[in-house]
Length: 136
Image (tube, rainbow, N blue to C red; front, side, top):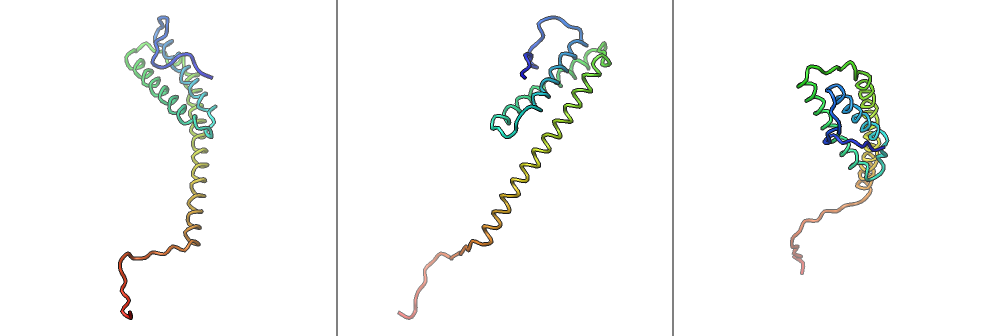
């Protein structure tokens, strides 16, 4: 699901500030849904996640800028979208936390294997130098 509007693009028609913020929240919502659909086991997911989060950051900044510079913004008109975006962000946090736990489990297995290898593998350290045999 790829949204057609990017955060850096201006809408093609003039909108009032409430409509502009609504469009930006719709973009945030679509970005959040795309993040939730990512399969983190795929190699390309990391780059896609970074790209989507970058768009989210720019979009949030634009919402803040519009809201701060315009006193005629009716945030009540987009309350449902705000709640939806917040809910999606909580789901993303849970998904990323769960995946972090999976990765930490893999790291723990590697560390356990390394400890076992070092415990049973005899490693000898020799000092470098010359040894003289006095009996010859």
